[in-house]
Image (cartoon, rainbow, N blue to C red; front, side, top):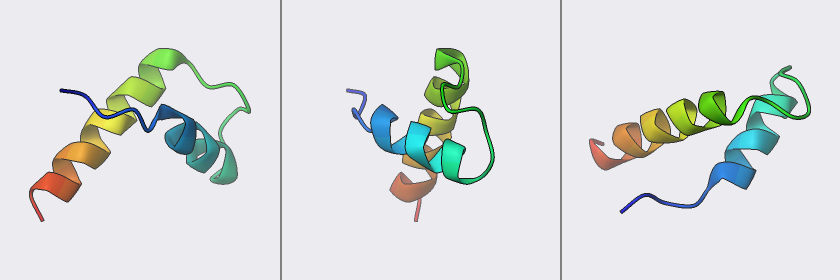
Length: 41
């Protein structure tokens, strides 16, 4: 099951200099990476 933290990821991406409305694919990939990183901690 995939977590629904895409809003938070979008805000973080914007805060770090990305576009205010990043591509959905970019958000999905970053969300997957974040979830994987946290799970493996």
